[in-house]
Image (cartoon, rainbow, N blue to C red):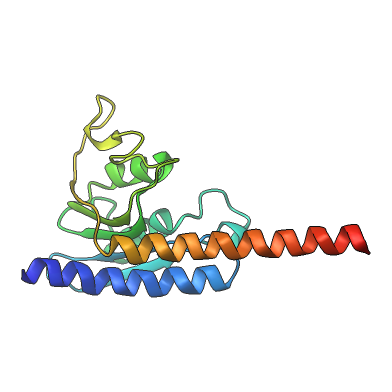
Length: 166
């Protein structure tokens, strides 16, 4: 029960990071890395648009910063929290980092590479298999993404309508 409470606590913080990213025009995804003592190492959110960098996903940024802060690329003993199931690129980075545990919120039915579309950590190409816990605050994570995308569609529709009438 205490572990579930810790997962929820960190996922709430990741959701806050995701909200900030969404407010900046990024797809709202937040990621947090904690150590074996449950201490925050680093946090990140999507920055693809702001950085004009296709690799600036929250997970990759958090793993990079955690490695810098710990002065090692092996992140054994650490946990990664992320609001959305990682894509193939991020799943590959997770495997390469040797992170001990991945905890995520919502499944990604389009690009999820942990369980939904692919299972990269359990595939023959993987040399490391982190423990995976999915569905932590799943509804809140999913609703945040759905709300953001709905708002984007409304803004795009309004802009198209204005352009057609103007």
